[in-house]
Amino acid sequence: MTNRGIIAAIPTPFDRRGNLNTSALEQMLSFLSRAGVHGFFAVGNAGEFYALNKEEKVEVIKTTVKAVGGKLPIFFGAGAASTKEALELARMGEAEGADALLVIMPYIIRPSEDELYTYYKDICNATKLPVFLYNNPSVTGVSASARLIRQLSHIDNFMGVKDSSGDFALTMEFIRIEKEGFAVYAGRDNLILSTLIHGGSGAISSAASACPEIAVSLFDAFEKGDYEEARKQQMAFAKLRQLFSLGSFPVVIKEALKLRGIDVGMPRAPIAALSDAKRKELSDCLHEMISF
Image (cartoon, rainbow, N blue to C red; front, side):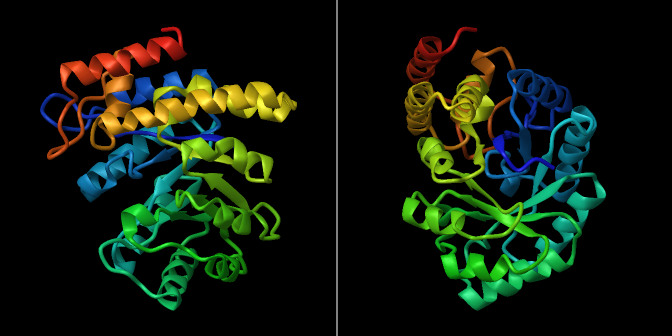
């Protein structure tokens, strides 16, 4: 499994009645694959994992694995507020063919560092898949420390971090961990280039599901040593991310995909659709940045 590149954190498509839309999921995966993304993250925050039941999560990962056909790695969101549920999800993701697990820290509760270590150790022991910690303190209320990540890195199949903390000094501490194959991914879309420059592996990005061309161009330019082009693409991608403020996450991603001809439906309630004025603002910005 490659540990470098742009991993698209994909939304979960629904039809007009709010049921899973697997044909739209397949269409979206094909679109993103053609755009050159390097992998997928299914059933994460952008995928509304909190609003899916177990059967729906199984259907999403099954459909994704079948559609991708082993051509790109698939990360499966196995995060939960309890160890019991996280272990069930970890085993389910492995059984259904995921290539790695991305596990957000427990939410609502605020575990101690020792409790977090045990939580991730138990998940790692329950699966043969690589396990990645998803650090998103704005959602969970708890941030992973460099000490915790170093401690976890001694577990064989604990293989990295998606850092959405926005604390780049902390991201750099994660990058400093010396372990073969250990990957640190940017979770903040305005920090992708900085993460790459300092030795990170890429990004796991929800905005990349809406505009994969920009994210992939950023990564490709960096890999070629064209840092001015990479900086240009980073500025464009940061502008796209700012549009998330038009509505509640992840509605802007879904509205952007619809504007691009892929109707993945709306998020589940209580998240509402954008107003006509905000949808036009989104459309105008997308047309400035890309051709479609």
